[in-house]
Length: 191
Image (tube, rainbow, N blue to C red; front, side, top):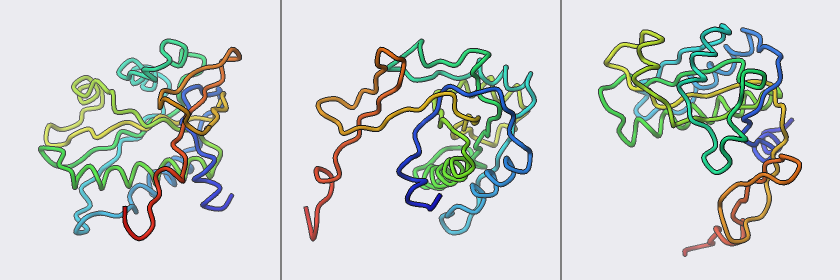
């Protein structure tokens, strides 16, 4: 899959099948995050990979999923992620520049995963205090977000936005994700 196809076919996945993700693939995904742009080459990010089934179960309990379509898109034990990456910022606070670095790393990991047919969900609604305790994360690190990973057990559809940005489920439980049309958000030579 070329990069443009990877970008345009990627959708957020919240339901996963039972296949585990190989350690080597997880390392490729995190390495792509490591190599993302970093302002001033500060390299302030670190990553915690979570793959052991019991730890994955604990992590699942610390996350909130898909506010528009709950509870139908909150994964249960049979369709839960098979791995997570906790993205850490080595700083006492999350500034906009730290968040930019972390966002670039997150996107690199998402696209690398998708190029390996692995779905992902970028989660910001995380019980950060509990996650820090569960995984012994030092106080001087901030949790930017969590990337949930697994082989997809759903096929969300992107479609042109009509009147709402709210994603929704159809009668067959397929997720539809409205996206603003390119012509409405693109300006040439000025606004």
